[in-house]
Amino acid sequence: MTRLVVDASVAVKWFLPEPHSEEALRLLDGGRELLVPDLLWAEVGNVLWKRWRQGELPEEAAAGILQDLRKLPLSVHASEEIAGIAWSFATRLGRSFYDSLYLALAANQSCSMVTADRRLWNAVGSAVPFLIWVEDIPSSPE
Image 1: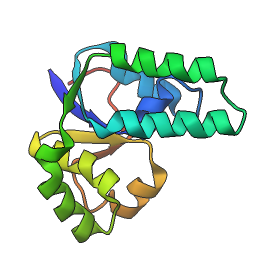
Image 2: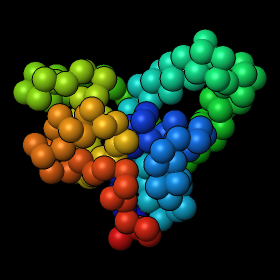
Image 3: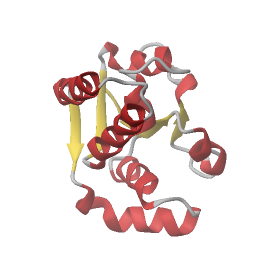
Image 4: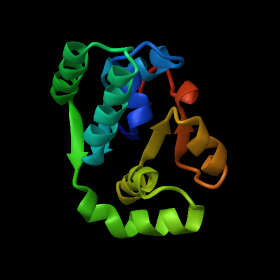
């Protein structure tokens, strides 16, 4: 089974229609183990809160998305266990500690990471060989 770390930019696309939502949804087709740091809930929750504040998403819908996210078969890993690795990525690559937690989890688990965060991709895509752009996800697990 293919193991992949997914970040919040991908997880949000499972629930909200955005560019690359179709590609992100392919990850849920099965045959993949999806890994996330526990930070995922805070980041997805913050995106939903922003959409609610902007009047783009009803409160009940946002709460429902958070419940539905909990039902997905995600392998959740404690951020504290990878904090040292994340710190190394953050300082070496000049990226936020938040982004670096996802990179650290992928490095720690010897697997790839999928992102739909264009800023992250543009900043480190060429420097991090295990980072995959959401459009480049294979149609079926390898």
